[in-house]
Length: 383
Ligand SMILES: O=P(O)(O)OC[C@H]1C[C@H](OP(=O)(O)OP(=O)(O)O)[C@H](O)[C@@H]1O
Ligand SMILES: [Zn+2]
Image 1 (cartoon, protein in one colour):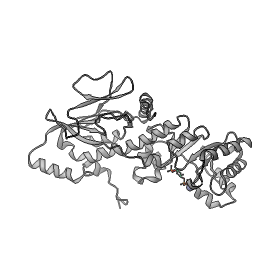
Image 2: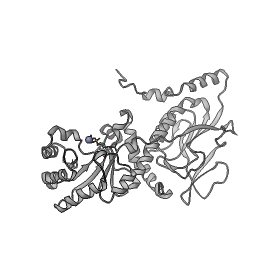
Image 3: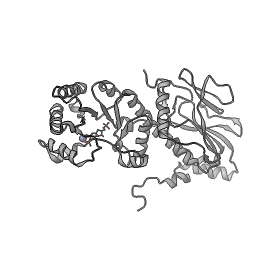
């Protein structure tokens, strides 16, 4: 069976079949009427700046989608922050891309949501180790999309193995409670020793120390068991037992230090979000973030025709005419008609596709540097 999980295959996406039915009906109607106007269409989330920036990503997949289509596409660079106005502009005969609208918006909306949430976690503790641990919360076919968005926004790593093969990065992580159960209560030390003896030398020895007993007792037992082979402990206290989580972490830190284990790091996971990272970043060394990233809302992009055969048009509530967006010198985001003088600042839309040929290189490291630098420039989520 070639498609056992019933996911939409890449060839259907590229063929324009991964589309809403009304776009097929639109094609039939326009072809029957002999219409195929030359248009300019823009992808926007908000018409005007809202004061809240999001991260733009997914543009590499959109470039692939448009390859071979007789259109020109301009877009923000991968990882650019934006707040209002177009993030992408498509020009050409409408029927060259009508059915692609559904997929192009999907390629942008969900990953941009993931990346924005990951940047919130990153900026909550710029000096801490922050890993993406949420692959289990999404359909397996898009796990690499979550992990790529997390790397783009500066996270230090991720847990999903197959995503790592796609991204060319080693997946990381610690150990699950299932491992502790397999050795059973009272045998936590055996579990940690077996892990230490079985996994490759380059895997950090981070013992999960919240399964059967108090976090302090298990953390001290792990330190006594593995000694200087122990790199850290992971504390994932169930929310019903969490109480003052910061106090628990401080208590573990205190007792590890008091017993001479100052080098044992403390990692926190389980419901970790930017707010909890801010309260823990001075007492914990790293975080595993899952559902904060994977449950992020998709950025609500829409595609609108803004010029028809050279004449500005718009749907009520949208803005007519071809626009440009700028990063202003004071870190603002400015939207203006493209044929008027813009503000002092940098015009952000850059060539992506020219007559069906991709004219942009994609480098995740470079995109991540851009994302973090722009987050600084605009004061991302600084209240
Ligand atoms: O989505 P979040 O709430 O941020 O959690 C993400 C972490 C926490 C969770 O621990 P468990 O659910 O205890 O799973 P396991 O025992 O397999 O570590 C699992 O390790 C995930 O990677
Ligand atoms: Zn668990």
